[in-house]
Image (tube, rainbow, N blue to C red; front, side, top):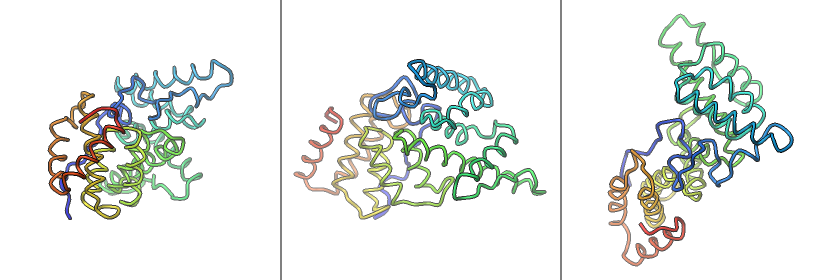
Length: 273
């Protein structure tokens, strides 16, 4: 079957992984399981967590103020020290505002990642005589860098990063397209009540992308997404938009399967759609 709905949900600001969860968080760098950045502190002792949280808060403020270079400078050392929240935010910077970073920052980051990663990141965008090629190389490098940092954060359980990674695999952004992996990662984030992941997973399941079509599972996840949409002020995934997808999927399953799906969705979200 083809896509029931083509418009996948994608977030639009620094709060990417968190503002679109069913339970809205104040700290964009928090992991999706409700834990903050304390476990990722880079300093020893009780002040470490506080210092990490302060750095992340400062980085977010700078990013929102349009001071992308300053935000990167503040967050990058923390990310390199292994803080999942900072890694996620560095990924967001490369994905959404990499064009605002100086060329030398992109070059250095690409070289550093290439030294550690299996795949070489093309960052010689300044050497080409073709303007279009330079721009393409730069865009590719930013996407690959974002992918690498999202992957690092996701490996530590950061649900926002898991969602971003799934979206990149689905669209082939910064990596080769891998619909099966996208579907698996969306499910990981969906189980943590991530609204966007639930919605996108429902679409993939209904369309049979990344595996067999499963309208029953798709209906469960779109109902879960609808429940979460009712609890948030999401500007893209409104209850009305999610409801339209739910209605389309509902026509593909039997009544008693729909009843069962609703029960499961309530169990997942704690809220009736």
